[in-house]
Structures are given as C-alpha cells and as structure tokens.
Image (cartoon, rainbow, N blue to C red):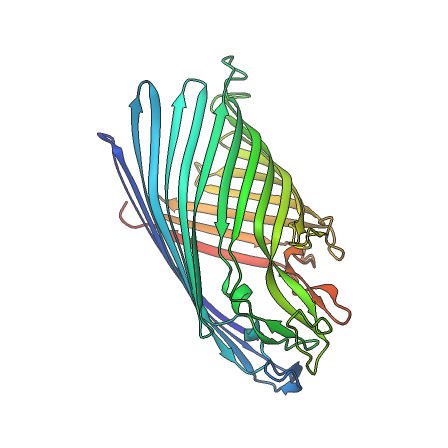
Length: 435
C-alpha cells in the first residue's frame, strides 16, 4: 500500500520595459515536497541490508521517503546593436538543492534511496549575434556541485563552452525560412546521491552487497550536432504555420557513470564474500561513453487544430579504461510519436491525443517494442486560470522503460527493476497571480 503526498509551489516574475532594451528580467522559483509511505500488506521474505541474512518483513512494515527539492533560476536578456550586428546577451544563474531522508524497516524499499543532501548550481553568459543570413550563438557556463551525507562529502566544478553557427542562405518565399546549423557544446553532470552513497546488502530476491563510491567523478560531455530548421506561414490558409527541425548528434561522455557487477572471486575487486551470491554492485566511472542519433520534429498548426510527428533514434556504447567496448543497456527506446489536437470555444478548449511507438534499443537483450495511446485536454478558463487533464497508457499496456534495467541472480542476468504504470490519469489546475 502506498500513501503519497506531493506538494509543488512555483513562483515566476518577469519585468520588461520597451524603453529599456537592456531589461528583460526573469525569476523562477520552485519548491517540491514529497512524503511517501509504503506499507507491506502481507509478510515478505527479504534479506537484512547489514548482515545479508534472510529475514521476514511482517505485514504492516513501512518504508518512508521524505524528499524536498528547492530551485531558483534568474536570468536577464539585454538587446543592442554594434556595427550593424544585433546582439541578444543573456546572463544569469541557477541553483537546485535536494534534501532526502529515508527510513523504515530493514529490508524495505527505502534501502534503494540513501539519505543525504545535494546542491547543484551554475552561472552562464550567452550572446546571440545576428547579421543578415548569419547567426552565431556563443556562451560559457560554470557548474558546481556538492554532496553531503553521514558517510562524508564530495564536490566539483567546471567551465563549459558552447558555440552554434547558423546560416540562412535563401531569400525566395518558399525557402527563406530554411536554416542550416552546427553546434559544439560541452556539459557537466554531477553524481547523484544514489550513485555515490547506496550501500548494504540487496534486500529483495537475492542478497548481494552494494558498495558505495564516494570517489565517483562527474561526467563531462562533448557534443557535436548538425541540423536544419524550417518555418513557413500562410501555406494552405491565412494564419497557418509549419515548423520542422531535424538533427544528427554525436556525444562523447568522459568518466561516464554506470553500475558494474563485481566478482567476490576477484581479489582486486574489493567485493567481499557474504551469505548471499558472490557478487557486488557498485557505480563506477568508465573512461568514455559514445552516443549518436537522429531527432526530427514537424508541426502544422491551422489555428483551429494542429498535427505533429516526431521521431528519435539513439545508439551508444561504453569504453572502459582498458579500452574494452560494451553495448549500453540503458539507452532510451527509439521513438515515433504522432499527435493531433483540436481547439474549440474560441481556442479556450483544446482536446487531442497521441500515439507513441517505442522500439527496443539494440543493446538491451530483454526490452520489447511497445505502443502507447494517450489523450489530453486543457481549458483556459481565464487569463489567470487553466485546467489540464491527461490520460496516459489508455489501453493499459504492460511495458518497462529500458532505462530501468538491472541485474539479478547468479550468474547475473539482466532484469527490469520495475514496470511502468498502467492507465494513469492526471488532473492539474494552474492559477496565476499578479497579472
């Protein structure tokens, strides 16, 4: 039995002055508090996370999760010209903090979510320069992080560059909206609390130790992307619009983080023998991971309705520090999504649906293809009040996200840690204050 209470608070502020081109300030703040209690309705056979010995979780045993996430994002855009070149200079900073406390019976589900605190912050500056058919976007971002727990703390920081060059070479009406672009960008991802701190014996199914790794390095990504953007209005009728974009990307990630199965028979692995199977699991860095893929999205909007089609194909593999290549199990599904929406009541009411095909990743031996059907509706009751409804997985398809793959048994075999929800209904109301 699951008792879940989640509260999200958001605040947004924007000030723009047409007479002051240097002022376009945005401030977004949010706080999310999630309290979840999982109660076992029947006795369950488990393993003690400390000793690894068999135990029985009696009916009524509880696991608790108390997660608080705070965030703030502040940025301003200044617009000006120099020597006939238009500039959009954007600069700002952001911060996100997680405070996680878990507890409950030994062997319960809270084992998989360690308690601790994580702080991630950044500052950035970006200039978009536009001259006739040429567009250049250049930027720098500084990222830092800090993880804290009873085990200790770790931190890191990095400066990451980005540059995009876009060319719009045509002037004819049918091709004026066509742009070719190329991008080089670097990124930075800090280790999560679970990747760094999870420890103890696996409590369900089979018993084996998880080993913490406070020495995990952050991931550094270097991405090259090439693509096209196209936009055109008034194609079939006055006021309609067509937008299309497609891109190929190649992403090299250094110090990639993934879980590794270690053998207790290897004296160099640091994996101890215990009462369970002779393996351990630990998150470690790989020398590199390589990802490449293709993404496409097209939307036609006629005002009274719209239709869209999108697709993405991703492939990837890891390379160890010894140069050994291995297919990545945790690659998202290849995906094709078709969407259709209609507007009524002077565009206040929007209803629609989508069909989403997901193809299993090449490197995942147990994933299956699956297709989901979702429907949605939104009603803009006033300028300040909106209601949204969504029904996902309308036909209750049983499927697993390929990213949730793990290993179990001896010898270790790939299994899914969990299956995704069946029919899911969501209702949301949004009210804006202050105009």
